[in-house]
Length: 602
Image (cartoon, helix red, strand yellow):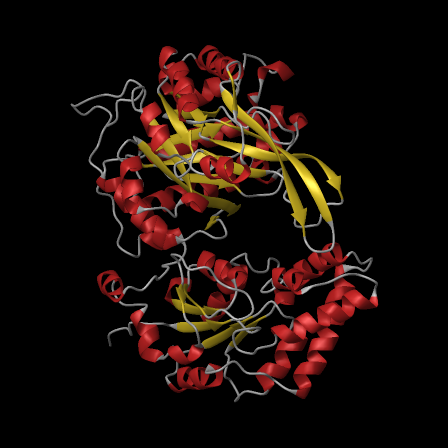
């Protein structure tokens, strides 16, 4: 028998979606804050909507200024809301009717809530028996929304693929969780607005949703486009199942123009949302295109980072392929400190990890893989490097050989090295750049983030020159070295007059794409530093939440298009094998105008 078009299951959020209990929670929050001498308001309450309860407890402790443990806050909130729900259950319009129709159609349903089981049970008990075949509550998962774990766990218990599930949510936090899990997402906002955008469909009420409407979301792509449906296909790992295959025919050795400085580019998932024509201009300039979304969560498990919107990735990767770019997705180390070092140091676990990556590359028909394992450098401690370094090279060698056996390449992204040896002045020698250059097809050096914790330049020219010279000296293979160049900056607070409210921003990022708006809004007077090759500006901003007020002093540093071009010229003069942009999606037309004279695009 032919398989139904879908969905195979429907996953329901509870608070604000199935039942209108958010007012109960907000009233309970006011009670708890008042009981312990804290302050609370509706704006703060909205920040907690959809969140994991313990996360909400931690946030409330800080925002309300009360000296109570998060666990006690959660218990007292639950006591209040459970009592309210036992007196009256405020069902959302159309919720029970839609749930009954799904049960009549034998479409399994799961409840996926960040409330705890002792609150969910009275709601479920008020429904017909077996309305929900699976219940996942916030006290049963290690990582709550917006992490995808709750929805992944519900799909696992039902025995269905997340991409075959329709999730119904009411908050941005819940939408992010369901989308990251790979579900088709419908958002019906309640207390908190859900911004429109790719990855989910907005409805005003559940009364607008019926079985035929649900099936439309699982129709073939051409029909979805014709219907104007914004449907997320979920985790990017589902691209293969969606029919995306390799169409790239470009080759470095092909006839035609060869770039003086070839351009590669990382494209982080949080920067994917932009105009299609704008993306087309960008990917047409790129040799290796690296979607940046996947992380290692176990020795043989790779998962998309939370919030990844697979429908954007699908279109973006297809566009890059059609432009002739090589698709070389990045994998980052999402393990805790010491985790990856233990993997590469154990023969059996290392082999499993290599096999996992190779199978993923095979499934996606990627042209290659970019490995970006930064925990060695920034989490494990220098006292581990002597042991980790040789194990790392064994891992890279085994992975490179396995990929090449299938006609794929290996690119490795690493922090800088400045000189041979293992002294502190040598840089991040744990990666053994010399051995790496012999094994990998390309070695990308991250020549940015010079200043992060405190205000300062992003990639000062003198330091970048040192990075280039060190890489050439240590590797002896400038043709394999690719220089990472930034088109972004940071905006730091540097002081304040008064008491700043919790809403005051800490360090935030700016990009070549966003800086003009900041300059205009804040009336900045940027100053160019010829020594660092970067722009900087200072300004004051008033922050007032109605309770506390301060005037915050802020300082911005950023690299613009001309700065990116100057760094690309350093790579060109050193005979490097290319430059890589951090990040695709941060750049604007001004960046391309500056870079194009340095690049000869494919």
